[in-house]
Length: 589
Image (cartoon, rainbow, N blue to C red; front, top):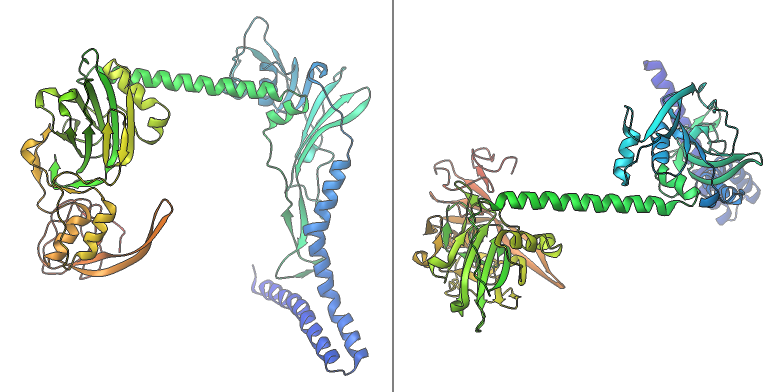
């Protein structure tokens, strides 16, 4: 763009803005004269002169936004339409693409169809002696096929002549015609005659009685003056704005709705969903059967009641880790009520977990412990307390069971995985994304019952606010685990620093960390909304190990070595340049 042309555009824009806003200022001046009681004739003349551009703009704006769309809707609604019953529809369909034509013939909606592939017309018919698929996905695949399909054949018969010149095939019998966008005679155009902005579907019945409208859909666009306003040689500068309309229909459904065949499409969709569901179930069954071969699954004793429990995380922390000190280990309690019936437990967790089984443990015939979290040859990061070692088995890898939580619990896939693995139907099942205590054999869950041998939190100290947060986040407490009593495939040892915010509270109490920043917010628990104030950034005072799961911000002074432990979830910033150190979460500040 040359400088002189740019100057011209700027000048033209400035003049148009001056005209519009000058009109507003002029009206205000006119009102002032009238209010002051002076020169009423002059005020009226000024208001007439300067008000005309503003009124012109407002009229065109209101017409494009409100009046024209309403009139267009009324016009479309007034068009006479012909109804076609399914038992009296034409044998032939014309319009749309070759894919649509193939699909319509394949599902039996029409005996013959004509469709465009580029500018070429193709005639589509059923291939004698063949059967078409019965699900919509497979039928659409026929439409997408470029090679010779199994149940329909397509023959090139001619070409269209160009834009808006379809050069329709010569057909000697009534047929249904689909016209789209610019090919539709009722296609909406804006004032400038453009058709690029709008979209149209028009279904017509062509017969010896004429060319009759069956159904119609459009997304019309209307011209309105732009804001800020601008003037051109033809008046106000305008933009095209889409009016309210229903969503663009699927072209296959639009055609079938027009001939009363919507039920046919719904039936095909339903079959497709059923086929997908059956295929997904079959694949899941195969995966589970393949996994079961090396899952170390036991054979259940006869006469036992099988109970399957799942936990995403726990409402209690453990003061001992399973397998690695760099991950948070949780505790979930299973409380067994007195009774005579023998029970078999399947326990599955999504994170490192210690299951603490208490109560009438003599009822337990055996336990299978599973974990999605693994380390070292796929062994689950889980442990169990309260059950004799000879009654405990661990799954060999994470694909053996589907933990019963959320969707797998609701859709039954978790129960199916356990029944397949253990050869026994699940009698009772329950699961929580954050589990506290399960009471069995009739599964009930309690989120805030304290774990046994729960740690007593310090009442006063520098980390008091953090301990308060630990109580809110982990209402079942911090379990003091006897590591010698835990049965696991991995080492179980006490944390050198408690995990999560309990560890931060410890470090603040001892002065190893000092609080450098506070966050304010609210916690929403059901209908309860509680405000909170919580430390969220800390300054490191001496060499330390970061707590497992610590995701806060830490400032590292120049003379102190980097923290030990897994830093990938934490934001550890060098005090020198306030950038993340090596191993810390990237991109934090």
